[in-house]
Image (cartoon, rainbow, N blue to C red; front, side):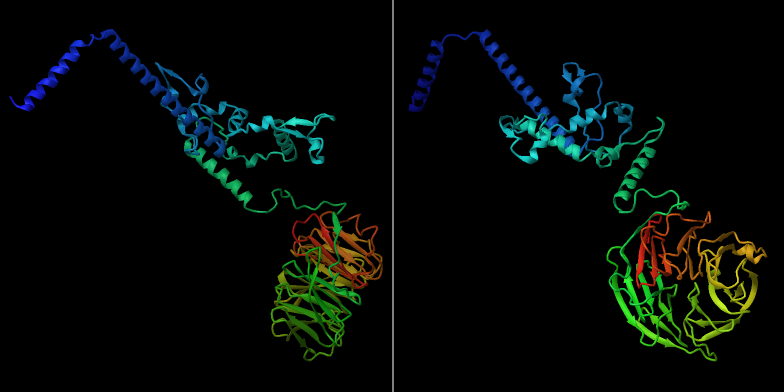
Length: 554
């Protein structure tokens, strides 16, 4: 027998002897041990599953707190959203992803999730994610610090806990900064359902349209509340006095012309000091932009062309000036060919910027082209010419003078289409037409202003709509505002002789002129294109600026 076989047999015999000497095991104890191990594994597994689900719930709550929830959990009579299914709970099987979509499904609508109140929903969202335990241990003395004394509820209160201090600070913040509903995240998801049979497409379209409307509001700085009507009421006109328009460079002589540019920001002011001044009007600083000195012409009148490209200036001279705003160049024009007039101080510019009508001697009216600066045509009326006004976008011209009649000229044929007597007028001194051409006003040297309907006047009716008798001296200037609701009339022969007339009722505003402020001797005025500003030039060399509150834009 080999050594290997002997050793193998010896080791096998020893193992058999050891097993024989051992006591037999109890089969019941073995079975009990197996059962206890299984129960421990099951308990450990169940605990791990519960822990995982708890973590999922906490994560969902955290997401809801940070990003907001579109709706609340569906409740079927169980707290914590749990429904028994055999030995298991549905919360272990299902959970709701609230951040997945902003559109409700038909199943969620059928569940009627809107039954939960907004307060309960807000309470869930406002649950703090983390709480500092040190707040309870800390104490704050709110009596020693001046800015914290407002947090006291009683006069002798001084020490409070950290958590109480935080809650009072939050309450003070809410008190000083009231909540805004439109800023809440959940406000975008609220849809007003008028009936239960609305389709999902309609709800989604309404939601998208609501979000679009909110975005459109927040992306603009325009007024959210706009007046429903632009009708100006009679009686009182709301206004406020602003800084003088020419505060940075007052005139050394009387102001003869003021006018706003079509952009409503540029204002010209001219006078007998031979300077043409431009100001940027904002109502606060009214910055001076430029001034031009005309050495040989005290300026009697200046006006922008309606297209804003040029300024026409004239005085008691045989010539006039044209200032090109684009090229910043001054051109001297005249004398007019074939005419011997020594003064071209009175003129009007057509609304289409094509013609300039000058008042001549012996009833003559000269029409000059704004492009070529050449005499185009001549009109002749009976008596002397003292006032002009264009109508029908420059196709018609009104004139008045010493014979007390108002002439209507058709500039397409260069003929007189109508003339009529201005009731009660001996010498016509001023004419003005409304922007739409429906009305015109005629002023006389006696201070009487007659307001006519132009169509009725052309049809033969001589009776004015209204006769204004609030001025007692010669009417020097009249002007309608942009929407024909205000007519301004003034006389330069009497202090503060400026009236504002409410056109729809044809009554004078009783609170104008300002009772405690002197306008000096008003000589000219103009309304801004949007009606928000009114500039008045007087004999003291000032251009007074007023804000009319009824109009929202300059």
